[in-house]
Length: 202
Image (cartoon, rainbow, N blue to C red; front, side, top):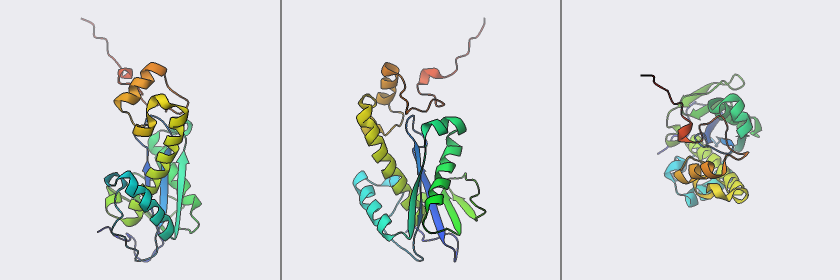
């Protein structure tokens, strides 16, 4: 059973991101605040859920949460600041939009930057340990999937309906054939052959 809180007696927001490892598209993050003592046995890390369950749980999270929000950082911004900083900025943007101000923040993973002087904790695999982080992972994943589905209509060659921008064989084959789109992250190694090759002299 996932835990309802990390900090005792504080309004706590859980954060997670989606799309960090993608070659294309924005990175999304969500922040969720649940009521004190909230429990839901269905909530889990979004990667452990089917797409249908994720969307059903999104409705439940949005209904039950005291506050929730989604933050977005574009491919252009990712290229400017790198994906780690972009992921953290997306979380900060989600926190900025919360209708209730949190008094503490818990984050999935092991990297975060202080937010408005609030106490914060990074929790490895936190989306499988705390309800608010699990809920944030579901919101970030589903809203990013919706966005990639829209982009897929504009750029059908890249199979984004299926891969959501992740580096699958079909996605990379399309990059090789058609080149990169304006949605691709130019700072990423889009093709394996872009690795640095060393010439050795005999």
